[in-house]
Amino acid sequence: MFDKILIANRGEIALRILRACKELGIATVAVHSTADADAMHVRLADESVCVGPPPSKDSYLNVPALLAACEITGADAVHPGYGFLSENARFAEILADHNLHFIGPKADHIRLMGDKIEAKKTARKLGIPVVPGSDGAVAPDQDAMAIAKSIGFPVLVKAAAGGGGRGMKVAHTEADLALALSTAANEAKAAFGDASVYLEKYLQKPRHIEIQVLGDGRGGAIHLGERDCSLQRRHQKVWEEGPSPAIDAASRAKIGSTVAKAMQQLKYLGVGTVEFLYEDGEFYFIEMNTRIQVEHPVTEMITGLDLVLEQIRIAAGGDLPLTQDEVTITGHSIECRVNAENPVTFRPSPGKILQYHPPGGLGVRIDSAVYQGYVIPPYYDSLVGKLIVHGKTRAECLMRLRRALDEMVVEGIETTLPLFRALVREPAIIDGDYHIHWLEQYLAGQ
Image (tube, rainbow, N blue to C red):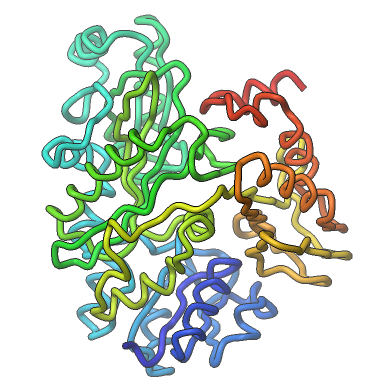
């Protein structure tokens, strides 16, 4: 097992990792920018090191500063959390060059799945169903038009690198294609330094279903069921739940087995998530995230497994915690991402939290690093915290979520709590009858 882990992140995920380390008896090092000197994970870590000024490129993305922090503190492993350097294959290689352990997948797998075109090709080879589309990058010429016509309009133009909805445009007709290609390529170049784009069939009302996997890096891998992440705004997840209200046990077992076998062939190491669009009973691979996900607590609540703890244990050479036959899905869980944003315009609302009261009670969990008097800085994402609830049934879970949302208090800044209080009372949400475009359509009608 590792002696000391440096947590190369901030906010709620840094605190989440710190808690897992403490339960394993591992010493912790928090790194922080000058803007995060009063952060909760900094206060609770065994040691802390300032790695730079507020801009991420000068602090949380500052690899030399992170290496220096490891050297100063004697850390022997680095946990990257999510975002920042978590899916940076070169960072994993640099750590290895300095005899430091990267708590995550092998660099080759990060690089492979980070290229959406290569990831799709690999998925097809591994027997995972994929969305119909181009075999590789396309250019804004007649070849692109021919491919689009063969797929059938509407088509989705997607950046080969990156994610988060950037570099994605829909061409509903032939007349839309040229503009969609050039706009997506320009966005991709600006965001990721790579203008490569490819084409996929644009599904009309799919759900976003993702399968959580855990691999030992030696050919052993299991799946831990699915999460439904279909409630999205601008391709950003807002509400996640598991199991999906749209998937039955037979479909879950089939796609889960397919993904687990693929990860076994890949000899995947650690946690990962294989994401699909699901429509008319069919699954279509879209990408794989080679890191812990924001929404991992949903899986933890329905399986009873601590995914971050297992991620650390497996990275240190441990075995899988259980066999596939021993994995059980119990009850239902929902997570709401409470952001410091205006609930109507979604304009960021940084500032000081004057009043803070997290909800409690059976089956209620808050993953948050804020506290009363904490100032949310304007430099990073706007996540206040994640409200996660669990119930024996989805109906019980929804009622518990309604109660928890009404109980939660965050004053001094604007938050998205009013949005969730409205959503949990919407008939379509109560019935589980929604898709990836539902939330934006709902918001447009408000």
